Image (tube, rainbow, N blue to C red; front, side, top):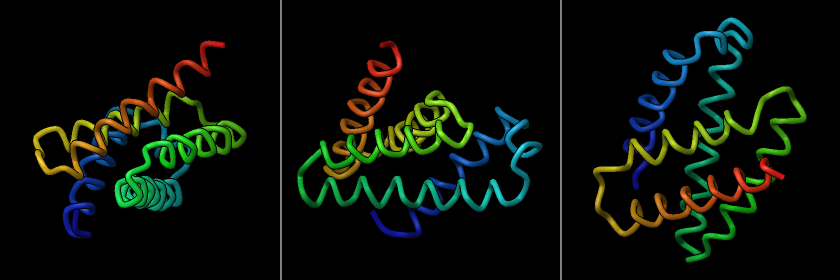
Length: 119
């Protein structure tokens, strides 16, 4: 997936997040948008690395680290899950092996975070 397509995906994801959760802008301001964009670039980078390595666990481990980090900073695991679901949906129509891999790994990461949160 090229950088231009990733940027398009991130724009769609962020527009949806800030539309559905206006309190994010109130709470975190413009700095929050910058960090959200950076975080999404990190998500795509880790998905790409997992795809290159053919190792979905690489992304799942990243997802757990990220969830722990953001929860320690006042976010909720539900925010991570929501973000991953938005990535999944923005890629839903793409049929490349890479996009299919991303969706599979995102589904596994979401399920794993939900299992850990239920404990």
